[in-house]
Length: 93
Image (cartoon, rainbow, N blue to C red; front, side, top):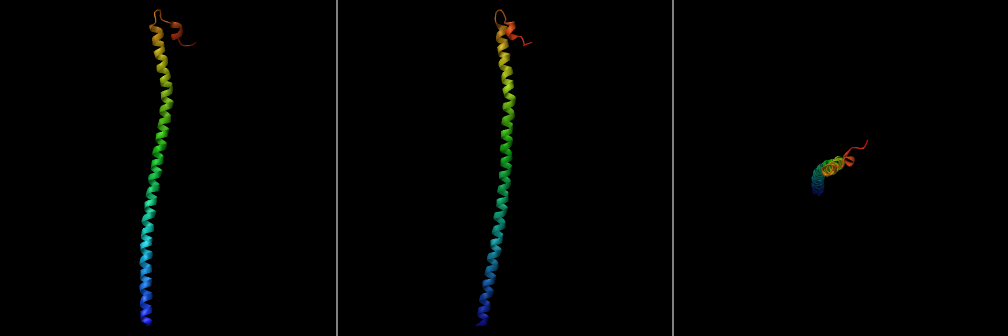
């Protein structure tokens, strides 16, 4: 009977070791997945930040360019009048 108890204990220990090994593999896999996901989120965050920065720069560049074009069109209209309105078209001194 002692050998039967010893055999059962050995099987239980082997089963426990197998379960622990499997658990360790699963934890390693999930940790790797988590790290990959975290790296991907970091990359996406950087891409979104670059997009926001690009939009901000585009706005800062477009705003004065739009003003230049608008004033240019106004000057063309003033100079196209008959007689041309040189006072409005002249730059401020």
